[in-house]
Length: 166
Image (cartoon, rainbow, N blue to C red; front, top):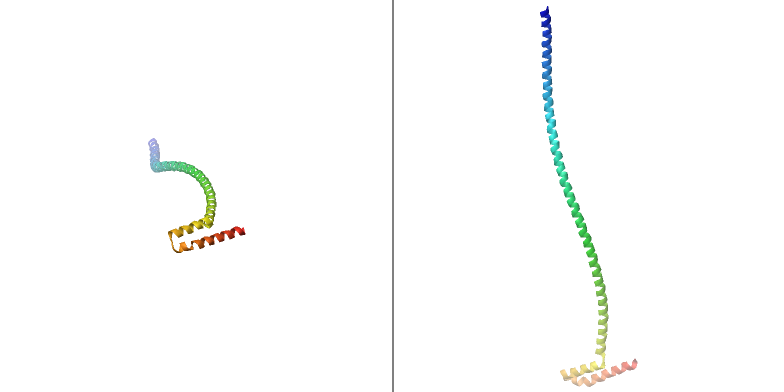
């Protein structure tokens, strides 16, 4: 009877051991699956870390490029301001030069008008005409020599008639 009891207890121990072995195998399988899942998680984490590093590097490069662009924009802005200032100064200088040239042109035109009037007054004078008749009579003798007294008379007559009317 005791052997039977021991045999029954041994039977229960064996069954329990089988159950434990089955459970151990199931847990080992589950551990293996979890280990595979953990491996995948670790790989994904490594991939994410690599992507994060790549994005961080890209962000750093873009930030550097942005800083360079900002400094170039600031430099161009300064150049534009200087160019605008120079252009305004040049415009003022050219405007002053234009004003001076316009004034000089006006004075020159007035002087030219006076010279023209003086020229025509000289051309209309008795002594110029008389000198011109004498030069023509000497340089081209003939008709000019014969017409000299008549031309002098006409010139004198027109000169006297102008002086009487004024």
